[in-house]
Length: 306
Image (tube, rainbow, N blue to C red; front, side):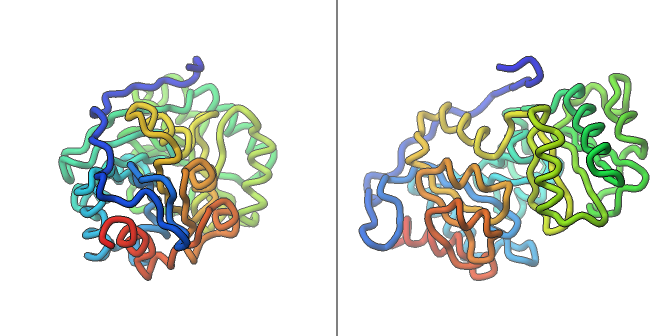
């Protein structure tokens, strides 16, 4: 484990393998050839409809997967502080890898009862380096800071989120050793640029920040998400699967944006949504129907309700 990464874990014991009644192969229909033991799905643009709702059809499909002994993981860029909302959406099913891999939260207790089972923080030294490097490379970049239970932003950061920030200050002050929330881990930094093309901003940031942090994006705007150097949806999902004795071949993954690419490439079977970013489509094995057409549910029904 690197010095700049603290991992804490209190994960539940592995659940039973998938029911032997599940087919181990789906022949010519494009489904998995290995019996799935874990479903990993992104939320926004994937499991959730555009109005941020989860359809009864999708809830039923998730329940069918869990009934078959298959774990359900929600793998999202959403912060840990939104997990109560996610838990309400999915009616208490599964665990959530949130903040693009920065934390794992157990949703089974329902809203108000979730608990952290793993935290992979962004070291403050790395965070400060990333802020300075990107400021130099893209003047005009503004920042917000996500922590386990706190949210802070710079005064010029636009109103992109529902919450009122806990503190308004320059990112360098927010990330200082004696800054607000100094006792809580930093999960990720949000970096916004008002004029740059989103994909161009992502490329520029990855070059500028290099190995000091991981950089991705899930928003249609020029909003980047900066995490620990080896933290991603894929790497945290791999850790959780290793704890459960689940191989990547036994994972079915769904996603739609660049922050899903590594996960889609890692999973044994992967689906990009029909509405997905071209990078996600290129990374996936298959294309599922659009999120507004309950694409994840359509695939899960084929796997567990056929």
